[in-house]
Image (cartoon, rainbow, N blue to C red; front, side, top):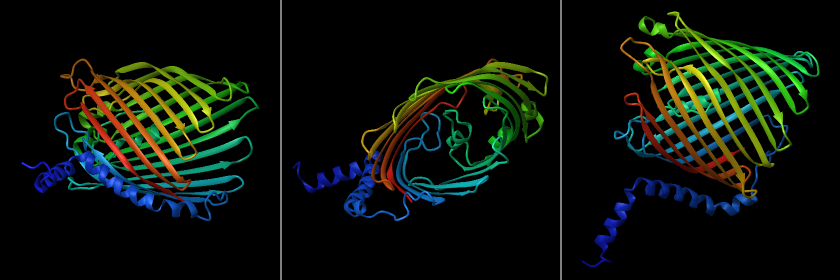
Length: 420
């Protein structure tokens, strides 16, 4: 057969178009091609209000092509891949005054996959209130709402790196307040409280995950030198699960006490260490305790480039039906580098080791272990400070002793970001 025959050429082209990654790149290249054609025009046009420090609002728009080889984080061997598009508009507003300031930020994400009947939508809203009664006494109030499918949004609240499975739509409302008072130039004390509401749409998850967490804390900080500070914190948390019956034994109180130290070695290098203990007490009078450790450091080797790393160890409430607590050790690192004024890249990764304990049912013995890790590489090229091309790759993998919880997932994003 003639190798240059139209039939063979046509078949080859069709075969390549069916490759998911190639198809996603083709979509993204079409978008990038349009951007490059307009590049000369963008280089000359700038929003007149951009960079205006008196403007108290901003707006952003992200348009991305997406490839996901495991939509829904299904167990290995039962995954479903797909191509999609994602649109993420967001805006922020701040209302400053002499003693009081308020802020609001809202982000909406709509994701469509070609082979999924139902599209994905997420909502993220953050509100802040700040009031200075006098130069020494300051009140801070925050409220965060998460509504959607992707549990990784919770990282914005907890600040701890995690690799989690999707469990359907959920809502999280986290409210917190802190009152801080400066006793002297060296001493500062603060008290605070928080309330977290968790609600899942899927009944099988809601039956053991819906809960309300109430907590209070008090801390004291002493500045030894302009570069070194030490302090202590006590935190009390009460977890009340919505579903009663056998799930009621998950209700618990916890006490955490730790000491902290912060030191700035030089203008580029700083580190902090917190160490203490946590004690959990359950309604059936069982209790458990574990050490609490949080060590992290940051090295800023230029004004726009840095490396950070850390390790945490703590006991938290388990989001698994057969166990009540989980001991988690997390190792994480991140590097941000700006090659030029227009080109930047970031690499971050995390390894999480989880050990489940305090089983609920008498038939559940021993414990379960999970090993998870996450790697993300991102890069961006800015035509102007208000428009940029972005690309990122995310790999997540988890192995588990618990049935049906192991998975691996690869995602690729390519698109355009606009800011005003």
